[in-house]
Length: 172
Ligand SMILES: [Zn+2]
Image 1: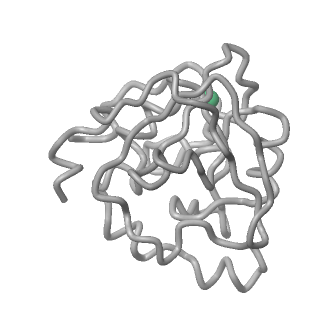
Image 2: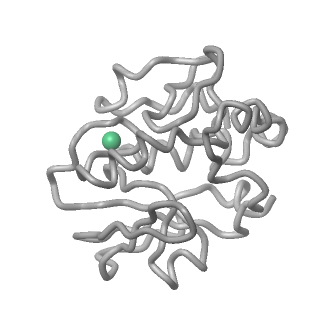
């Protein structure tokens, strides 16, 4: 699927763009180039603390906190990324170069080394993409500190959507 043809949710319309895709609020940008495999930890922590969406950067006010992750995350309800809006999560699941698996090469060639040079930690580096990913929606979450970083512990699932990503992507 051509990711540029997926409609961008209103919440994300004022995000900066890169090659036709909006750059999520928490994505690391190095020398003007976004690294979709890396996050800006200051923004991640800020989002977790304030219940703002990691993708569009705006407050989550509808009480639906979405998390994207694989089976382990669903089982443990633990996520390294901040929560996001329903619309933002579904957009990211379809269009994010890392999550959607449409631009794996780009994801693999992330600018991790550069990022480490400037002491910004990575979240996705060296982590294999889970075979199956779901959008997990909870009515609440808590942030906690472990192994040098903040994580989210999602509340009990309000909804778990294993079909958020097209099958062709899941099978890769
Ligand atoms: Zn959002």
